[in-house]
Image 1 (tube, rainbow, N blue to C red):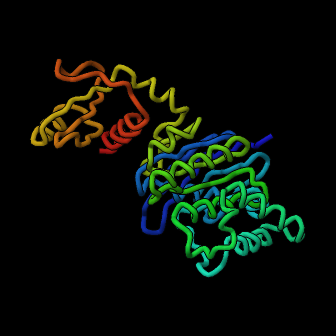
Image 2: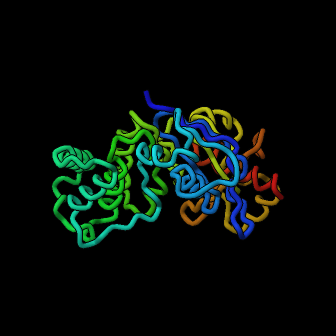
Image 3: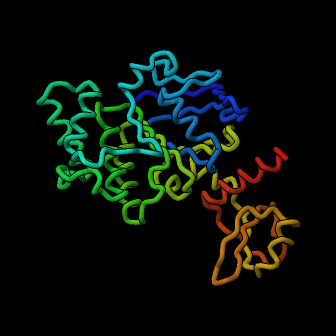
Length: 296
């Protein structure tokens, strides 16, 4: 049985005064868990803390029976981590590098190491390029190699930080499909600012901003809570400032040279607005907007 990750009252303030985490509490079950938030929200600080790479000021993290903050070696054996910046040795082949990582993970038996590495290269669709130097890999291939090293040792928890940033649409789809398969049996935390990735993959999610958990739940329920409150209208660009002044505009986008606005309101602002079924992007932007207003 896959253990649950329990984070309680986690706080971290850096020496420059930035409060990166403020009493963060999350319960993360097995499966895909999406952590959404803008750049600077505290996502990477939280991921590094869970991955035992830095200490919080206060709070606790448990992975099943393990105390993450006190039993770091045991946690690292149960952890797979793909950070946002993942470097590779460009002149080493995927097979050689993954075999080296296997030893670092404690897989020292030569036969077991060979079988494990071969199985993971096939699972991540890198078998045919296993002898190619990592420096020749595309962005998507490098990310798949990053997941390959994270899968070594049968981890109970896998953390991936902004994994699809910079990937083209086809590579992003392949990578997400692979993550979805992995997430059937372990905890996978997907930290991202790409709302569609969470909407497509995750059964549970949280939105973090300013170091705080602003919302958590399952995506369909968070969207349902906004039903009947999202309104859309296409306006001229010059009208945007007036609408932002008078209404709760949560997002804008260009449509054929004009601006489509999404507004959150309990009732139709006027007859020119159309009701829109809410999606996760509406949840995300309305949550951040409410947080900004509260902080102002």
